[in-house]
Image 1 (cartoon, rainbow, N blue to C red):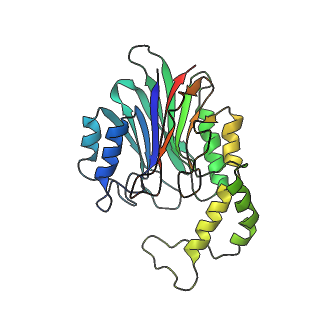
Image 2 (spheres, helix red, strand yellow):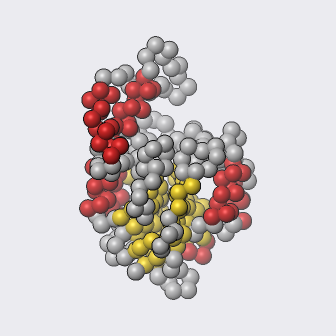
Image 3 (cartoon, rainbow, N blue to C red):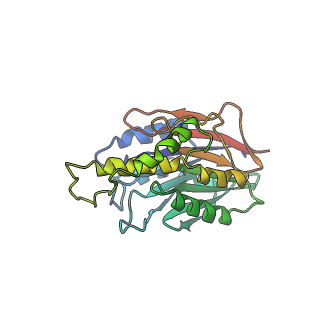
Length: 272
């Protein structure tokens, strides 16, 4: 049961302001069996641009969408959609991870009847404590007897990453910066770069390494052994594999698409 899995943070691509056609074109070329697409919805929107769902349906995909429902009062921020070949989908279910919602799918090969579980995630980008809670809740739902893939945006670096080490050194300095995010539609301060301070603190917390250590301890390995950067110079998007799954040689890809600041990643995986 070789399975091609993709993950891509498209940052509001399915909205009037972004090149939706480019996203659809990339998926037609890649033709994955499963794809986790985070930030698919424009912020604050509860529907996709006309024609998107119909286009994926025409390609043979079952589409599952979930709101993130952050606990800051801003529900339906971005949302995530997970695509899966209709003939593979045995079940789908939302999984509440404290302040975020993930998607759980059971995929069953129509011929062999072998099953693989897949979780689509977008872990919190604000606090390491939130990510740790989400990771722990997610792993408690994983069946250790079923080969499992966890894919999406993790917003966390490995503790041994050289960039993570540098970020941890400057973390105390970032806490001195004003860090209040503007409210939705609110006016940004022309004097203090509060948004900059917030982003700097979020990035240094991503360097803590605790979240990825939880997945490591649970026996998950990254399909990308090189930890290629997926946003800027940081490795934030991942496809994790449990024991019992391995990547086919040479099938991991990280692709930069014009107009997007997040890379499209994909890998073909199969049971041992």
